[in-house]
Image (cartoon, rainbow, N blue to C red; front, side):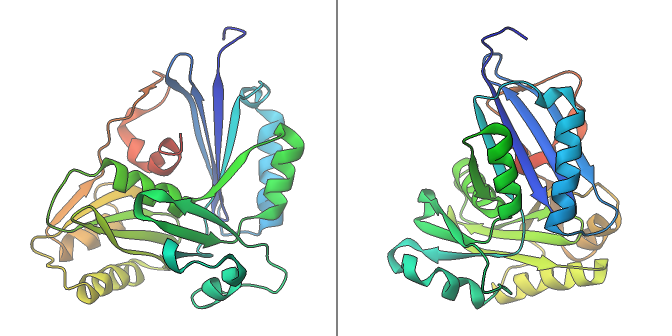
Length: 268
């Protein structure tokens, strides 16, 4: 590394695991990409312990970063149209579809591409630690990145497309039609039957045709695993999301499974 290389770090926080990505802006290359899955869903306190252990033991994080981003990935978020949003009612928006506690800190991301505000609960203990470790940083909710990325990069198509970003026990669902977001939701699943129930429920509610509507997959899914197989049983067109990035990927990173890292790769 040259002494003046510009580097950016993204950290994805989920109660089921952690992901890390380093972009060397000087070389325009992703030079570090790592995921640490947990055996079972844990607590924000335990996640912080895992995060501290990784950041202190891996020399990749001992450098100075020009920018640090923390991505909070949880189901504690809701979208509000910009024109209806009132900052005084943050908790009211969230409590309709999320279980929030009286002392939860609530914040928001502006998603300018579709004139909406994403209201959510970040992991405050993680934010405090990142600030103590790296100084000033930015944080966002995972759904803000997913929505912005898919709307920025979609080809102009009239027919709807269903995007699924699959995690260990949740799936983020976006439906985009004519370059507009029709639906965003997060469903928690415990079996492939739960999983397909929610996806087919979305198809039914939006009157989507399983014979013609395409599903684009990212996240924790591989061809012919249980989730892929059950999707393909009911929906004719199932693909893995393909995206041309504005940066290159280092040779030491396995390029075959970049769809698994879709969220963090689109955070830069």
